[in-house]
Length: 213
Image (cartoon, rainbow, N blue to C red; front, side, top):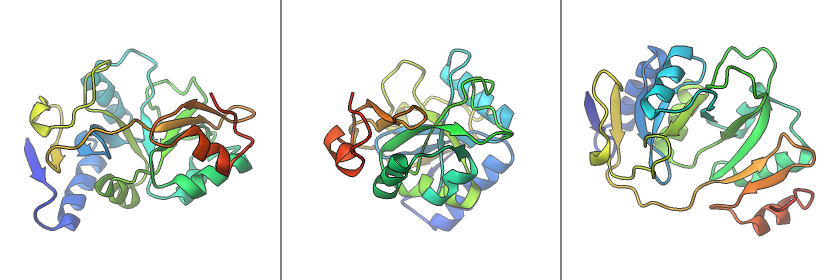
């Protein structure tokens, strides 16, 4: 299994390598803003299933989706309210996760067997995975740490084998920061579920109709 230092060499080559692995149905490891994550093609069922197995997730746990631009959200989500669109316009790319209802008929299974009628999505600000989502399309993403464990910030703490992930794309040690703020955009009215990197005051300043926790 290759560990690729994306701080060295041509970033276009690293992105092409990552996109090719995803297209072929493999899972990779890539850096987010504050930790490392397992990444798969959101529409490749076996790859998403493998991602959950690697983490030891319970049945029914759904991976998050990351997309390359706010414009891409309309292709995968429905019934987006005006207050939620204001948040999207102001905080994407960034550490705001929004729970939305998926478009009907999407050929994906993020881990819940399409039973939840809800998924978490954001446009990341971490450059590598942002560019990867732009080039490849929607990504299924989950922490590279085993379920219930603290996030992994040092690539040397990753213990995957070459049979489990195609490659580890590394930026070295990552400084751990606050978790994403989570807004339930699929509830009426939308509400803040978890306060993290973006404060409740920042959210309500943009969209006063969204209720604080």
